[in-house]
Every structure is written in C-alpha cells, then in structure tokens.
Length: 161
Image (cartoon, rainbow, N blue to C red; front, side, top):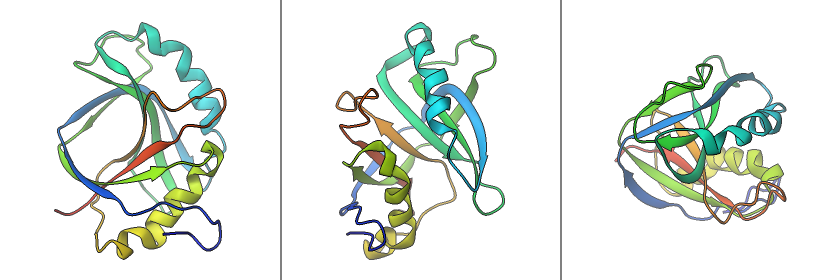
C-alpha cells in the first residue's frame, strides 16, 4: 500500500496480540505539528541507560490522549518492569493488553509522519481493520540507528479483534 501523495509504502500489517506494557519516559503535548519530537528524543536518549527496571534497549514513541483534532500527547520512553521513582518529571504510561495491526516503517525517520498518515487515511481500511481508541506506538528495536535515522521501526495500531 503506497500513499499517493508521499509515495511511502506501509505494506500489509501483521496482527499481534500484545500483553500490557509499562512505558516510562518523557512526554509532551503537540497540536497540529510534531516539529518538537526530534528535540524531545534528544532530551530523552541520554537518560535511557540510567532508568531502573528497564526491560531492554527497545524504545517506544507512544501516541495517546488525543484531544481536539490534530492534538496528541507523545511519550518517548522505554518498557519497564515497574515504574521507577526517578526522574520525577518522567511520565508513567500504562498500555493495556491489546490486539494490534503492526506496520513496518522502513524509510528514513523523517518520513514517519507520512507512514502514520497513510495508515489512518487508507491502510487500515484496505486491510479491513478498525482502529480502537487506545494508545498507538512506534517501536524502535536494535535495527534502528538514531544517529542516521535509518533502520526502520514498527508502527503499532490497536484494532478491534
């Protein structure tokens, strides 16, 4: 599936049932733009190694608390076994167990918004899936290189199962 305006291919999703997640990280609200997200990640990345209870080095970009159209709360974080006490300014996000449509984003990270747009515009419908009102997230594994923005990531969208 290719978004005709951006030529970003999101492909057919795989369906995954995922246990609940605890995400600990830095949150910020965005309205009609995501311009500040790279700076948010730059503030968060140096703290990763010192986060207690961290499960592994996988990072997450959680999209939640959508309010008015175009407004989201975005948390860049890591999965933890239990929420640590510090840093105090970090958010604690509980994501319930869900069924997800998992899309691959293989292009440069600068085009991720186009992949999200393609998912919301047509990819879910093309796959005969319906999104649920629950947190969606980006999952950045070992293959992703934050220095170059290459390596890809996964876009997890909660769907009715």
